[in-house]
Image 1 (cartoon, one colour):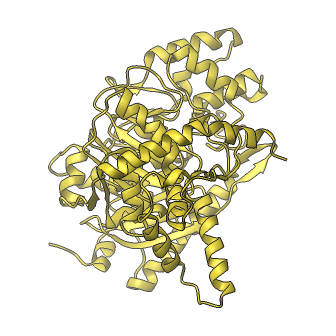
Image 2: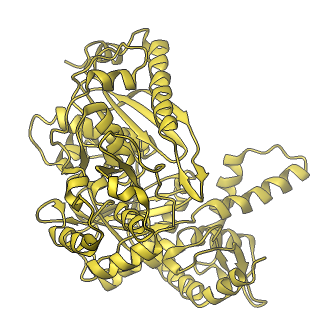
Image 3: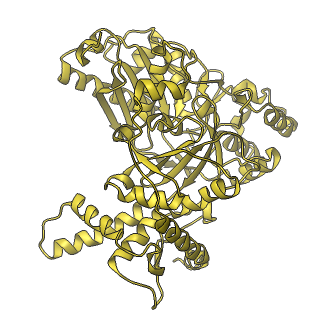
Length: 532
């Protein structure tokens, strides 16, 4: 029998998903049909402390409790009831980073987030040792950099985890991690669905001369796949989450996951030969592979889905910020003329007008590098628009080149997968700000990746919904389906969203644009070099 939202919460059948994003902590309650019925949120900011980006443990707990209190108050407003029991809980957070604890469960150094780039020496050495691309932000890079820097705290490490793993441990007592998040700590062996035994052995041998009283596996969380038992909310955990004391202990908690994994779940992109692209302030693509790549590539990070399939991730620091800055100029001009401004209309008009331009942007080029861009080898960036006297300089081409630039670096990374590694993909789902104006961002991305792009109404629900769905998979999977089948049937009901296929003209135009773009990277290099 289908319960309404109020009865679902009263009966303790609702599922709670909480995700710690970099600027917002979000909580979502879903019903038995996996639809959101209430939300809560808390806004927070990272701090730069001693040259490293961090969030304090106090800020983490205050944020979690405030977010849950906001959810509780919204449930009261909407349904006039208290949340007493839940069917399941899931915790997700930004991946990677470094949270090291001693045997008294005290944090040894402030949480080092994924944003920190002080790990270059360690990441390079480990990439060579493992013959595997180890990014700067991975936990193993942070750990080895601390060892190279002879940091005093390393000898006292008893447990090393991610933000999601930390919250989960504190509310359940279990030192576990979902496989997707764990794959951002240390590479995962696709056969054993556990940390790579070969790399663990190599690391232990590498640091043996230091004489620490721990081996790598002693301090890492246990790896769990989606749907596995990851413990229950303890009485202490219930108090930490709900300071009002209404929430009861004993609720099953699913394996904690990273934001990349929950994004894959929220876009129904965990099946092999599917993928998703998140395009907002920064962008990344996740393509679920049928097998490992033939060799490591510096611009491609290898992670996994929440059920352990290998995923090739291309992460770009820049996406829509420069494009938005140009659109704000047009807004200023409109205000100057005394015309009322509706930003949705400004975006809609300019984006759609861009599609009337030349498929290759008429020779115009834009570099949207507000910050550095590792995929193209830039540690620092300078936004720049470039044209020659003979280029076709029109408003349509100008807007089109900025749209192309927002996914240009993403294309360069994915060209390796599709052209060199011959990766096959059946469906890619887009989500994020670039796709707000219907059809335009989709068409541009379809041309860039030469692949059909779908956008779903639910993609805006985000990672908190994604981790709530993993909670649902833990407790509502009566048919014992694999995760991809459960999502297809129980959540998305066959809804693949609205799909746009690339046209031959757009693909050829984007390819011509990207060749110009790559040839002009030396201009960007010079601009960065002489930047005052």
